[in-house]
Length: 254
Image 1 (spheres, rainbow, N blue to C red):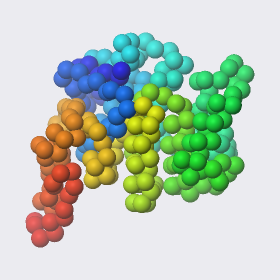
Image 2 (image 1 turned 90 degrees about the vertical axis):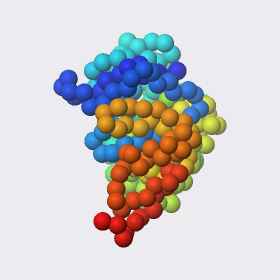
Image 3 (image 1 turned 30 degrees about the vertical axis):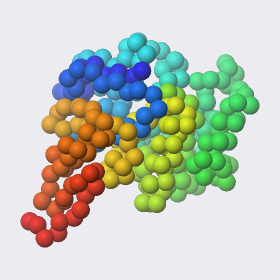
């Protein structure tokens, strides 16, 4: 189990956000991270991935501090999709996914039949099968985003961390992707923790919510999150009316 214990995150010893007590992420959960810009959502994801930006407290995985786990072992349990796209665009979509199977290959880097099956299924699930031989440089923004998401899933980890996975997708594909990811959690017994600005979609599908507000990281079930109308606290605006995870524009207000 992935557990945050009294963590403080930030940069250059300046604390950006902290949690009091512990937050435990169980298996097979679809968990959204919500907060205003600059509150520390991306920083929190990176901290959970490898302990970076951890200024205090502890992140543990299966009872062991994440900073004490070697990279090979950690990469078999936790994968992360960041907003950084600095990757060689000369490789193909399939090669991108093959590279992500590295934690499970032998010293020669040879892929077994089981690896190829996982890659084929992921390519199919994310509508990338017809694009598998295309170089990344030839893809549209939306196609590249789906390929990067597929890469993080092919790594076959217990915990999959995603920073704005619906970036570069139109509204139809945003909804489709989040549904695919939620089904992946349930069918594969994995936990996906993702940040998102698609508030209505995220809260409609999430099992639990991590939210960051006033420098504190808190954790609620989706039911409690909605019942307490926490979104109105996170995004106060005279132009928005929040109810049950959705918002309505109030153009007449000022």
